[in-house]
Image (cartoon, rainbow, N blue to C red):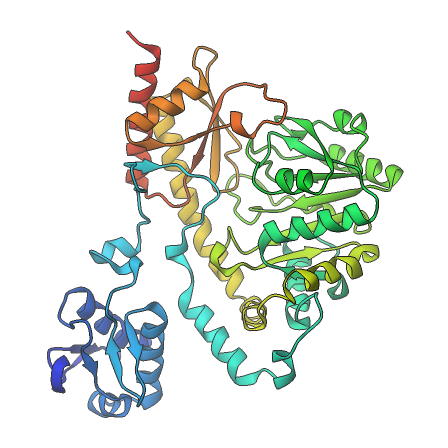
Length: 477
């Protein structure tokens, strides 16, 4: 092992350790040493680092190795580049690095006002693959033709259309062609564009799963003047016989992992929904929000592959990478593509080109597949910790939808009132949501939604113990 204690002004206590026999790339070792020095307080905010050429000479490595290490630490927020080529320690550490080194591996357990928050619909953004994403950004900025940075049509960049089709056809069983892809800013914008086009085409009524999310399709459809009808959901997803009676022009489904109950629409039910759509000339909107995360089951293919002329496939990077990317995609039936693209242009002139190209490169390099393979066991351990804690502390709760996703619903026994449990949990410092507010008809068994993606295993156990205490309060002596 070789060590170099550099001597260069304010950062003179910086220690770089290189082990050329370790099997770890040298730029990674440089990153690790500088990162550790910043976390330990050995490098104060604003301290200047040596020029890349100077450090490379002192360490006996190529300048490119040091440049790559510096660029990665800049991307992570540890360093900042100043005019004139100076690189300095950032004024504040990135949130994921605050505290001990262990804090980068464990997500936060607390939100403001609560000891533990089982909030749903979140992903662990501390696990975002920054280094791989940065490599794709560099590729885009150095290789993209100039004309890609001009105004494009409303569907987005062709490179991302092709990369998404390759990925979705291979992994989700879609029947997607690049000409039918429209890029949008997440599911919220995607469903808004679709509702606009449905109204333009004469739609009067839209069917939604009951229960279902109350912050996107339900609100947007009502604002657009559509009648909204709820279709009851059972253990295996939406009840298709009720859909036949709904007189709807479109239906929004989460068939691979119903939100929030977790049911999977059976093959027979999927075929019947497709027959319904074909007979009525209706549209099925398939929200495939978290199908990549599965633990105890085989993959469930997308409905779009069964009927690409009647199903709109909706996907996003929000649950797999980070919601802040605002990246989503629609696979649209051919007869709707032009209208959806026109609605996108009217909304915002198109999504950011660099982000689209970066994601296209990220997909094509296989980095998305690698990220999912890395995250599945992480989320599975958290899910297992939740199920173990429920079995230990609350065995009379009935978990459902456990085989996939980033949340679990636990049905309450008849003697427990859902609202009372949620209120009592808040008094004990636990944030948790009930199923009731997401019902359209307003009736059904009480249940609790446990989002576990952003919680460490210890926090999950603590949260379930707090819930058990709250339930004892509700039941009384």
